[in-house]
Length: 129
Image (cartoon, rainbow, N blue to C red):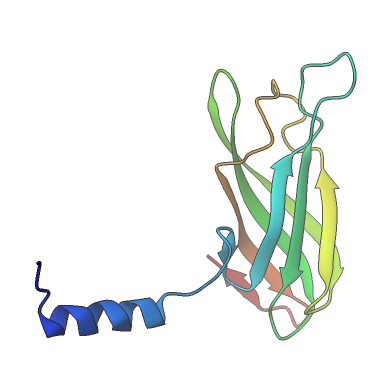
């Protein structure tokens, strides 16, 4: 039988307690609920854009949110940015579709990266990743 020293068990327990139980795309004050490339329109092989569903977890309304989205099509790796402008209240689910990646060959819904990189709050302050 393998014996594990007590200090190692305590360290593992402490690390598990500190590890956040958040979705894969949660970073900063904007929590990504879903992020995916939309299927092509009939008779097309190009993606139809990008859907990002997110929640503002900040303490005030956000006015501009910039997202970085990474997608791999059949030929290349891409990371592109898109900014969502509006009045996004805390705790509200926002579901927006963008024309991001509508010019690349569709290679499935899954994105390699999807995160907010900049938020401009209603009071003019800015959060950056």
